[in-house]
Image (cartoon, rainbow over the protein chains, first blue to last red):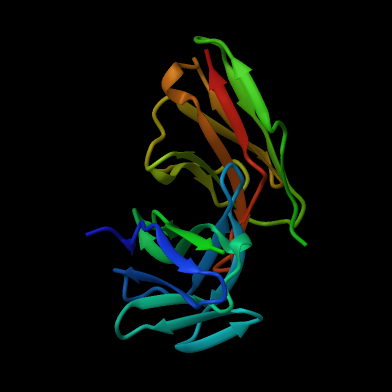
Length: 113
Length: 111
């Protein structure tokens, strides 16, 4: 089992809709969770982080964390074509003797007009 | 804002050359990382460092080495470049359980 799993997509949504991106992780002791956006040919850019169970909202973005289910999600409201990118879920987990940030493979989001 | 600066955006080298990729961060972060990213393979950790003079192998260290002589600088070295090391290389820094911040990346081509 991979430590951080995401559906690779592409997830295709119409402009103005809600995009829902999901991520599961295997380390029950994980305490911090991050969402990065990566445009093609660019480096990952942090868009949300969450440390506590529940929802955290920032503008059009909402991160949701459920530690009991080992599940973290990102909702993008009023999706825009400029949101089309790959979204990486990342989780701090104990791996190989160190606490490291483990990345999922990413979900490609396509927002069509 | 955290600033992570990678020395080159694009680099072209020849097989067998020794290649240096430099990374500098300005936020006094303890932890620094080197990744490579290839289509369909995601981010793969090459080496990381949690302190000056300290280095640890990541998931794919073969063919690479690193140097961390100063806290703000973490260098990745390709001892003898090969074509299969053509990739996007990303440097990142972090403090504790805070987010990692990435540089702009170096797109390296080995001919």
